[in-house]
Image (cartoon, rainbow, N blue to C red; front, side):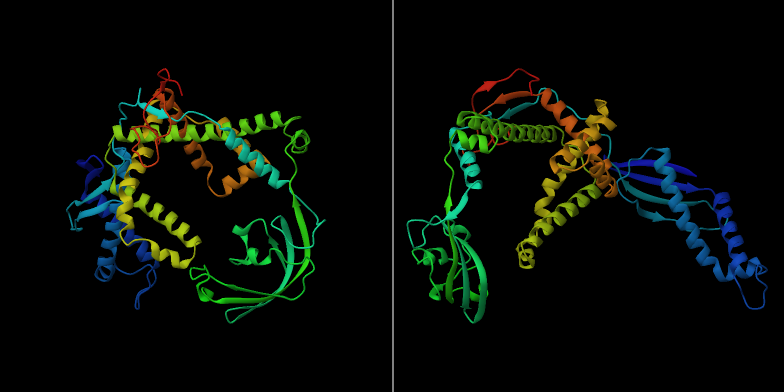
Length: 454
């Protein structure tokens, strides 16, 4: 078998395959031998049908099977002999016919990754936003902790509901023409954004704590999420079954001890600051790696095989449809008809980035060992409060161990790019302004670190 390769484009090869008649004839003869052992024809004993009869009856079928086999073997031979990194099934352009005494030939186009030589990736200019935590941010976290430690205490000193209360009511009535009955419903009067129906919290304020069969009417807004009752009147008879006042703890040293964040409020706030800094640093590092990949792609506009682009688009579209599907079947209609084409430029750059990272890993001899995968598994297990063995078994069952190793390898490449970059620290750009190249949404000015500083 002779295989010739011609370049069609950096990501397409033309295969020209010729198979000598002797090889073709051997395959035809072998198929007839197998056929003669299994075929049964009237007037002939099994295995004794003359070859001339088989040729007359099955020649077309045999030639079709041999053609398919020769094409398949030709693809395998071409990929092996010429080390083609194919990314798609070959596309036949010319298919010869089997003729006695003549070599068989065919031509096909095959898409490949192509030769990728990443360039200009040392000393890339990148920007990152500074790590800063404000007192307001600490206040918000401490207040959230305080809200999580709220106590519901019996109400003393008043006999009507107030904004600080959580009440349990029984409810019976109608919404539009629909009958509704709830023997027990909890309503937090301090959280109108979570009220069962718009306006219900306001209507329940100031009621006697022991009220029975109180008549309550609410007109639902025209833009109510349940369109079947939007704009209609809700009429209920309600009784308060229980009422408790929300008591928030004071933010003092005792509170710091209760939440196990130190002995004093100062230590509590310092602990919270550390948590926020850790979260922000993780995000900043992620933004910097993303910016490094974006800059790498901008500097290396390598061609991408169409088959890889279509597969990438398929994946992105499935992800998008899954996300919209979770919002309800009607939301799928919100996808514009040209969404696939609008996603194409981004898909091309995403695949371009993956190919460049893979090529860089080879060029820089970056590898991921068993120890790296084990460390990742241990971190996931710790976050989930599960055993590492269980996490590993889950990844193995889902066939994700290889993808984990690939992702860890890419992370190492991105860390290398950042370590070799010239990183400038800048304040975030005002919303709506254009970011500088290589920045993850950062604006002009400020302090530069030494080349190679992460």
